[in-house]
Image 1 (cartoon, rainbow, N blue to C red):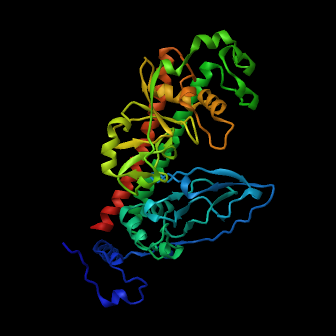
Image 2: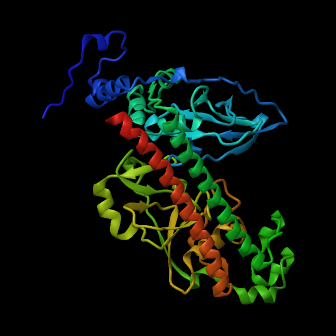
Image 3: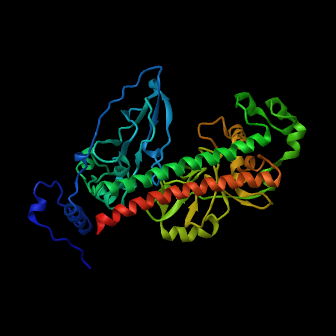
Length: 432
């Protein structure tokens, strides 16, 4: 059946687009709804401050790249860079309560609310920076993460290999303001979500601290010469504890798990939507992230599902590029594991969350760096992974550590739910 939209000539006047996709009914309905709600352009309530960054030799800064934004929570990773090594795109200074919006592939929705007050925080020129002047920055952040607005911004993209929008496209997008009580309600959701994310990090830190305290490694400082440790009898050279103590408390991971490698179907199979393809860049110790995610077709997924779909309770462990990231899969998912990731199935009486924490801690990381270092692209071989040493603490301590990790993940899940609730509240009003 042919799909079409009827529009007024007045809607075309001044427009730079005549293609049918630009005038899809869903866009026209949204514009009508926003007009009825007396929505105003974002530029009426926020500005693009355009704080230019000039790198200085000998001084470092914290840099945020588009690919380092978590698409579900808006969290971001920072890289410390010296002025002389500044990327060409490191051009914008950002401050607390700024909202940064990726102008590249806006359908991905890389949007963050800056929550820290730092003097040397810089973001890529691929972001538009918004400083809220008349509304709560938390509300602006959520509004830009709602499904209708994501689609509306994607409508403005130019048809290139990397679809992009401009700062003006964002500033001219209309925003429904509602009343102050409504915006405060949305703000509270965002603040509560941030508190839960902070709580999640704190609980994970407690779990890691407890592990290191039990092993006598709390004040351990990594040094390059310690990467030469090759067996337990030499552990004393690391100024940890006597070798006998360690021999009684460590097992090779091969006695605890069965490992299975993922598959590489080829970049030509990647899609923008479909079934999840779990790559190394998809994983963090907190879970499967939404950073630069790739997907596979339903057909290919069905072909690979039997051998390469991870199961609930298995540990996903990265072995390439950034080796040593471990995460226990909490719930069923429809997806395929890439060749850079191993699926570890627990076969002994050890808690999966405890085992994953051991790998993510300095205990596992020093072994990963020792084995996988020395090449341009790190590669942790499966036979090396099978020989990594895992501390076997008393069951009661393992359980306490695992419980802290579980609480950490629960707090993170709650944080995501709070953000989703906030988005749905706004969507309900602008879509009706």
